[in-house]
Image (cartoon, rainbow, N blue to C red):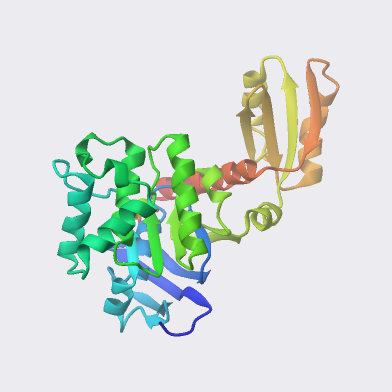
Length: 315
Ligand SMILES: Nc1ncnc2c1ncn2[C@@H]1O[C@H](COP(=O)(O)OP(=O)(O)O)[C@@H](O)[C@H]1O
Ligand SMILES: [Mg+2]
């Protein structure tokens, strides 16, 4: 592999399907050996971007390199060195875990099939289960098998597309331990997810909405960069309060968290003015808080929804 600082370094990626612009001059830079989370609402272009990075889909515009190879000229070299776990990974239900992995090794024409399969089983703690039928596995074990299949050829880059969707929390946590293990061995990972606890386990995140970059950086950077101010209120009948507050333009989001509401805005003073009338009400107890990643995430989701509604009414 060429000596590189960034495992992924692509610029201006653009793709339309028919008249629909799905990815709009999008840049992705991921340093070697890091885990980057890829976030954004459904339909924002994450899967399309991942497919362009690994050479499965040719961009309409844009350029750059993955693992030091040109995404337009050397797609084959990139494919050989990349593991891609698709959103709906398919496997053979009536084959065992081991047979599935052997079959994948066969299809890809890998050498030393037995050794590779043994190693992958061992690494992902599947050895004891190798004779179980894939169709009878729980979601967590299926995803583990999928990860084993995606790493049989010992890739240097892993693109994981919502690998833990629908998997229970314990299995998700263990799956992420494996991802960190792979990164510690030098593999670079770009992983799309809707789970915030997973985003917080990444070195950095990239947030995409409607084909465009919204924000990126470490979770701390993203929280700071959002320029959000948050008040927390406790008291009775919070849902009625939520409804009232939702109408004020200084208030970007109102979100229930357990027995409290988180109320956020981007203008500190306007937000305070909007809430001031309620401060005197003895039914409520108010305090200001630093916004959490979840608050920031909810705000970007709300922006995407506004965008969507605006587009719908234009159409
Ligand atoms: N092969 C395709 N043909 C037509 N439209 C597509 C194709 N692939 C994706 N799209 C559309 O592009 C948009 C972005 O899809 P996708 O990249 O899958 O987003 P995400 O992974 O963020 O949910 C969606 O509106 C989807 O319907
Ligand atoms: Mg997708």
